Image (cartoon, rainbow, N blue to C red; front, side, top):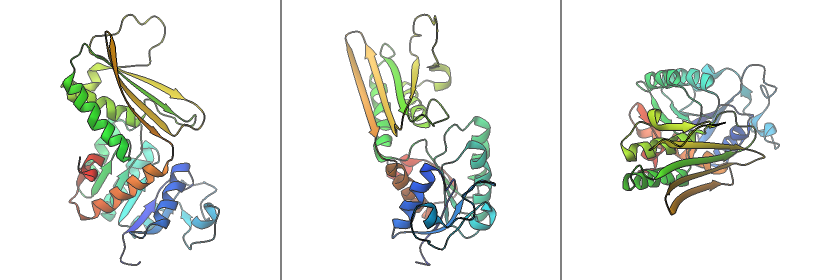
Length: 269
């Protein structure tokens, strides 16, 4: 086990963090070397096994990321934009692969992540699942084949605890559609409609967000024109698909040169 890549999980007590911990502990391709939580979290000091409702595994949750990253070959991070930027700098210092599933990243965050990628491998994606990344590629191809007379609407649904909208996956899909059409998403994006909005702009890429219950993630890309519609759809029912994809990315990155990659690279798409 000692020669297997050591993995650190950030945001260990969250729903995604706990799923990642279970996935790493169950894997025979890596080993868990650390679990991080924010300062003041009640999870700090707890054994990871106990945190997960089982027996102790000999690894305690800590708020000292620097010390743990020094022992890691990869960090898997589904936290918040501010925390992710800090983790990117620390992972770069440790020359550890940094897998980023955090959403809601702004241009200033991406700039700092890009700087960190000059020193270490960063795999960043709004969604780590194979199915979603296939959907992204399909959306790009369909957009390439259809002109702007086809309206595009990206509809996403998530649980009621999600704090950002549109989702990172919806934005990935929007970027794919924009790329297929040869336009800028920043210029063609249309979201947050309310009140008397007037008619839809020709060529706009629309976004609609639904929040409710415990929805894991649903994404539709609708192409609509007079008399017909095409709908591409992905439904996630279990967060483990994201954890498995993130772990695959962490292991894939072990042999790569420093730089910023995405799941298309990992999956060879």
